[in-house]
Image (cartoon, rainbow, N blue to C red; front, side, top):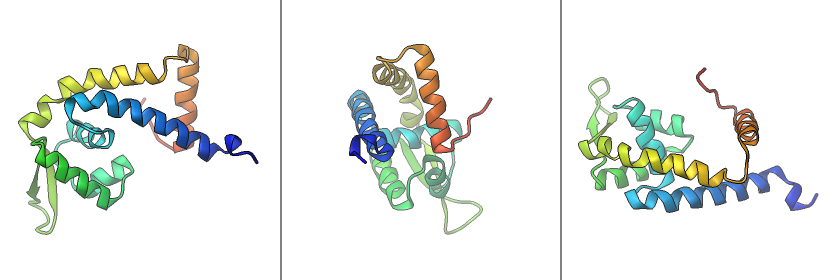
Length: 141
């Protein structure tokens, strides 16, 4: 099989292109795409544990630790010892972490438009459906 017919190769190449565009656009907020995942889940539900963030984002624990350290250095999050588990921590947004959402939301919308520019609305919906099926992701109705 030619590599150009390998789904893993095609998805990897597409992800590289998509990630590069999101990285460029998010750089104005000093946030990487992976850091955006963490912020997004905290905007949805503040106080998650690193384990919960890893599960939600699909990233491994060691990656999450580094992301949290960098977000903490930027004063977007803080880690506080868990009230329920002395060994655990929970991650909370700071005022800056909450406020940056207003700047990031339009960047994410623009990045999606940039990446999907060559697709009409029907093709965008089909692509999204295929990616959801491939990833096994579940969406809320």
